Length: 324
Ligand SMILES: [Zn+2]
Image 1 (tube, rainbow, N blue to C red):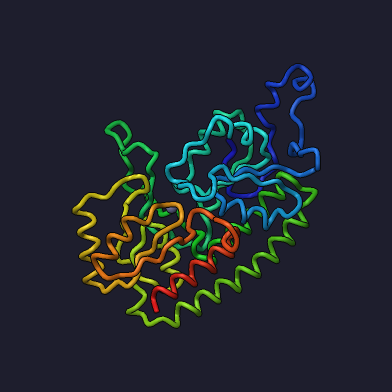
Image 2 (cartoon, protein in one colour):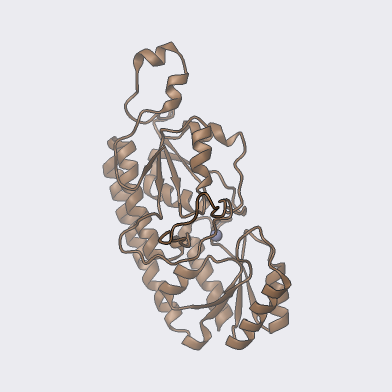
């Protein structure tokens, strides 16, 4: 696997060597394996990342998200049939930071060990990384492999700050150009136009949330998806209902969140489309807070939330309605 943060030349794909003598004699093909319509294939983990890739790639790529809309990425297990999509990809795109790193091993097992893979959220310049990851799939540190003191576990949900999503766009334009240099100018042009729209959206969200009194901007969310959103747009996160998706909170943890909501006068509990909102409803009934249902954090949905921009607009509208 070539894990890329910066542009680099496309690499020879290991799978090509398995196809037979003709392939072996021909050696390593240069350039991406394009589909019959001349498009490259990009495989991402989430529908959010797939949309961002589509905006930058335009007509030059066919994009597949492995995690279906409405399904939790944190606890997702790819199916054997996903290996075919991964093996045919010219570029693999993940968020990284523990959200969807399962694709790294899966690609290795799928014969795509040498396919370029970009981790959009890793080591981005100008980002203030926030602690608190959800490495549900990873083994806890053991005696033989203790966690080092300077090993940080960062929250992976950078894209919910639109300014950070713009950094994903810039990185994607570079990576797409690296695997498909013939279309580099188009990738750059698409990225510039998209970036301008995202800059406008970022400013709009900032203005809308600034209009809410600071003492009314306290929230509790279902899982810990909102720290970058909150930091960017001036919200205060008082608590989360589940520490890690896929795990049930204990009665004591629920009681602690209920206590925190009462103490801070939290008005809204944010529920998300890919999770049941039953726990949020229970907590809201106990505290008099309001549930803001069906927010789109790690997954997109049907129009108008079938794009990243649409989902961000929708989320902000719902949150504002709840806070007022
Ligand atoms: Zn998440």
